[in-house]
Amino acid sequence: MPLTIRVNGTSLTLVHKFSIGISTATIPDVCKTPSPGGPVPVPYPNIANSITLSSGTTTVKGDKAMAANKGSKFAISNGDNAGVAGGVKSSTFMKEATWILYSFDVKMDGKNAARLTDKMFHNSKNAANLGGVAQQPLIDEVGQTMADKLCDAACKAMEKKKKKDAKAKNKAKKSKKKQKPSTRKFQNEMRNLLDPKKGGQRGSQPGLITEASQDLVGGDFIGKWGAATGSGAGCARWDIVLLGVKKVSKKLVEKGKVVLKDVFKIIEVKFPGDSPTDNQTKMLKMSPKTKKKVFELRPADHCICS
Image 1 (tube, rainbow, N blue to C red):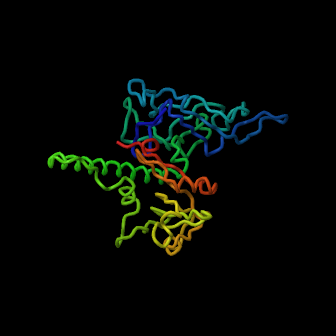
Image 2: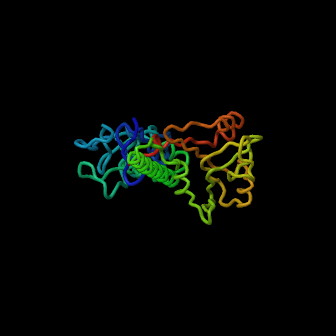
Image 3: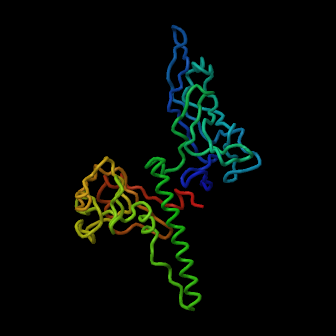
């Protein structure tokens, strides 16, 4: 089921019964397991799913489903099934996952709302997930912090474009001329937020290249879009490149000599009405290595904008 409710952030969504939430214990579920010599403590994985949510909201719904809040639980967990003698702390196995953290200022049915990434106890507090509930593809690709940053910029870009289009419409109405949309594009608005110009140029954000160029011949080299990188028919153009190394020479970025192995992820943002360019399609067919690194961010699907 689509996730349409955000809590304390643009990619931080409410957990509900049908949100396809999966909580995996990051601290092993150590359970006593029968053996010929008697019960032996064995560390097991432990996984709980939002579909088993119980004791959640009753009068307020999230996407038409019971929502998770303080005091609710994922009623069943799995992975420790063989530890029938019970957890070393809880003396139970396959038991509930409960919330450690939740929103402190958003409440549902009078209790604090539980969100994506909120930490959970597993198997009656015998184990714990300190990483949170995984729900959205974007977060799986780039992590929570970067997902929030990208979604925040995308949502603000759409809002700015919307206001400028409305202003252009009003102007056209007053002058009785045909309406023309504002010339500023979504992607440009997003770049201004992620990588603002300093001294008339972008590129001041470490580990981030916006409006990047990738050479179609070979496809191994990538860098800032511009004359030095051969921008044009022989290059694919990408919105955002996240580097997988701490520091890359500015000269390598400017000359388009950053090697693909130093790239963590290529984010291609597709706002409503956007489609891949011919060169992007060619690059994805020609370079399997590039295809593995490209994630198509669709703000309408991956972000929850107000």
